[in-house]
Image 1: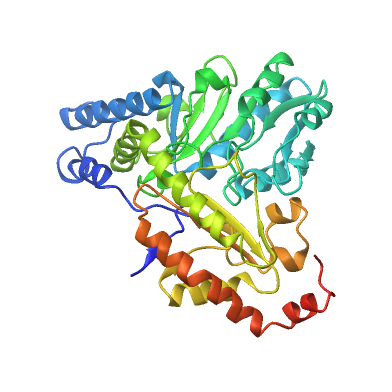
Image 2 (image 1 turned 30 degrees about the vertical axis):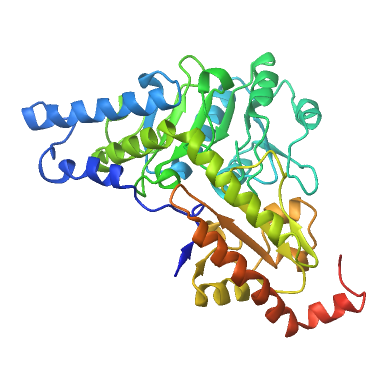
Length: 395
């Protein structure tokens, strides 16, 4: 059998999403901006999807802007808050060291435009942001705080509601990248009181290449990062990807409808993996044990290379990753794992298993039967592991 355990990278398209998308290819194929009946049918489908997605996160449909995915949503949120802050001379942004590169790279670009960026550390091992650090970092010049809701590599769930409360007290806009959270844990923008929130369809069994940005009315005036049309209320130029948007709405509705049941089952599988893999000598769990996504398992195994581990697991019928799919071609260890305090040699030996609503007990059993002997085999050929056994390793 083959066990697909790389759902944090992307998920399979759900049958419900596929069925919802099909009519948009050969029946309701008009441009939503057109005035004729084909366009009006498409416009109605677009508005219906907007309303359904908004309902899933307890937002107003007018607060939803469709994007090409989570990265674009992150970019637009940060750009909009930065430009609004610059108008009043506020050019300081606060984030963390473990954000997705869609955030970190955009913040780096803003630094070259005269903005100051503070990247806060997180607690070793758990990856949790200390609220005291955040509070101490805020200044009169801070125009945005952006902290991801749940980390894509280690699964740690940040105290978003408390962060939002701190920001609101200082009247500082707060954005959260919730791409890994939406569809997997309860997300209610009214209860969380966030100003902006990014989501991505491919993370909850929707199609690839589509996402959304929630922006609370009256908070940050959204600035388009694409020019050329008045679509999305002038917030994003370009004809909407209607089949993907409708598929996203169907996938999210399905995810939210049975969230407690699926989350409990997935968390049980996650805990089986964590409990068993923790028994491997010098295996280190990455991320908080309890404040964790139900489908995330992340370990570092001393004395081996993550790339070799992935290749051998693939040969044994297991799809996994060593961290973010967005940086899979990099030879550098994960910035997230380094921020946790993992030494370079240890961070190189990382493994992420990420589960979904379609994960089965048979897949978990298959993974648990394969991973320990593969780790042992690789260590048997590793000079690094030999040094560790002789007391010369980093940890």
